[in-house]
Amino acid sequence: MIKIILHLTEKGFVPDFLIKKAALYLSKRRLAEPGIVKNKEKLIKLLSDGDVAEKTVDANEQHYEVPPEFFRKVLGKRLKYSCSLFNDQESLDEAEEKMLDLYIDRAGITNGQQILDLGCGWGSFSLYVAAKFPESKITSLSNSIDQINFINNQAETRNLKNINALKMDVNELTLNKKFDRILSIEMFEHLRNYQSILASLSDLLLEDGKLFIHIFCNKEVAYFYEVKNDLDWMTKYFFLGGIMPSRDIFSYFNENLTLVNQWDVNGNHYSKTSKGWLENLYRNKKEIMDIFRDHYDEPIIWFNRWRVFFLTCEVFFGMNKGNEFFVSHYLFEKTKS
Image (cartoon, rainbow, N blue to C red):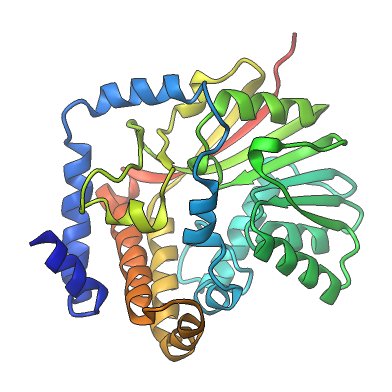
């Protein structure tokens, strides 16, 4: 029965309101699973061992090797593929810039700094900061060649000489310079060894440097995204190898870096962001279907998978008035010996 319902959903026969109801039910069901607190304890232990990231090829195929033209159709003008900041009636474009400005303020970005954008996506932060702070030098890292090519092309088009975008696997983080600021926006959700990556990032900071991290999280529980049955649809197609961190996740990994500040961003901001992506998906359906025909054997199925993904995120982050799942920002400095 589940397979039949999923098939009908992927063909576009299930209306939005039913998908939202199902998403809310499944989210509540996961939080009510027996042993979910013990699973967090297991996850914390595992985050201190093994590779920094797993299934990086799958993550690329699911999200980051999708044609850039698709993201231009669904994201805002800054191509920010992460939570934006809505105060009143801002457009998605305005909300993207509000969040980027918030990063600048909270991370203490100033002109002339050496900045590392780790997991840079389509360059929303890198390109924004490069234009705003022309004397700063920005190094942008991604393991997606499409993203690196896009950022370098945009930098050339905009005559930005202070960006260097590099393809690099986070498991093999090798850079021969140190930074005043390192920023990581919605990348730690894809990582599996926090102890190792935080030690590496500490080594890349100058003595008075700081690390700023933006993650989505749950208020108290943490769990792996794993494909156990057909209900783990979103994991299978969008988040294989990922985790849902808890708000306090970094308190367990403070050997090399010390947390100096933390802020929460209500989940309704992400809910509105996802709704904005969905509206763009519908608005640009014809062009997106043309893009998908060149990329997928079954374009209508992938159109509806993205539709369900955005609908699910809208519901997910709106739970409990945005206080169940939300975004947290963290500012770290090197631990003093």
